[in-house]
Image (cartoon, rainbow, N blue to C red; front, top):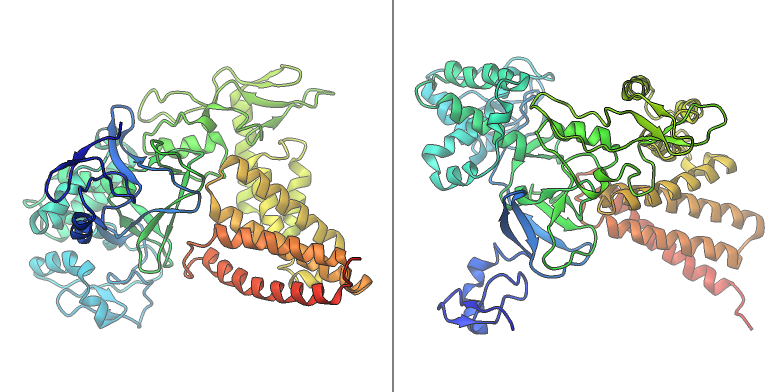
Length: 541
């Protein structure tokens, strides 16, 4: 029996639902049309639900196909990152000395007069005018302490000027109790709370609790918007309710005007939780969990709970016992946080070899990983020889798919060809073959570990299509037009189609968006090549 509910217009009980979101009822098509102007802003295939464990979360109201946009949302508010050099407070563009326009009301520098008049800039302008003295910014190009409070100040402004938005922000998680007394808490109290009180003379206006809560809301729920350099911060409403999963079923992107997109990375069945990764899915489990611990978040997802990370051994270390070819992993990575200052360690009992069952202490493993991490941090960027040297050196310590090895192999796959002015035309056959192999392996690995990470896979598949097309070009120089050459081009086109599909929601401001534009141009060229070659080849008997 179909669920009945009240019509959104006349409250008549009916079983007919909006086909888009499956969450509201209408008794007639006319009433649906009548309500559409209001409902279109909430019509998404996911509804907000609450659970004692998960808190508020999003649940799919209908079956959602991979690649579908689930949610497109404007920010509740924007602001500069807490640690930032001077940026325009209207558009967040990086400011340069001698190329700024000061707001005539408050003195805060912007990139243009138009930006001084933007709505985003009103809060700090208002409180600066109340202060009675204009701001003067004289140093550029390096983090400036005056900007640490701006986005928090914008949140506080809503209390007295937009109570509806203020109430909405109070529903966001802030983790104030867990954060209290930490190093970050103490720094925020000094650089944000005391600055707002003293610089803006607002000690009697806003309490420490109100200011620190706003800090927490931004830190826990804010999204870094990468449309500018440096990135700026956006606070979104429904997007914040997508719960975390290290093997999420969704990914996020942005539109050119700063709206956020929540897109399905895999098919999502009706009734399923809509999930998003809050951390780098390309990191190993121990690294991801340490990152999440900063927000006092304990992930117990399927990937975290499987020490092999779906059979990839993405965090496995090679056993050093003589004649053993096994790999070491802890019994579990899921160790509860015992206190707010505790960083979870993979295993107090140590790491066990899957082959000889020998055990190595966690301290030894962690020291090895720290040493490797330090070496990676000083390794020259974009240097294929440095990448190959690292792989040769640490292949005797790490599983071939270990996240450190994978990160370097990924970098190597992308840099092969970049060292030549002719790009892939200038690389040797063996290097081209290496690039092709690495791209295939990494694309397959990422699809297993994080199938919703479209951006990473789309980029590496673009590299793969180029390598295969170049291999086909070299074949044509030797054998001329052949069916084998046609096979290379067709395979390259199929991979490029997948790449373009994965990147189709990326804006041109992002590197992936620019790759998408190039992929579309390359598709036109490949189609022409394939048509011409097909005509040139003899028809089969």
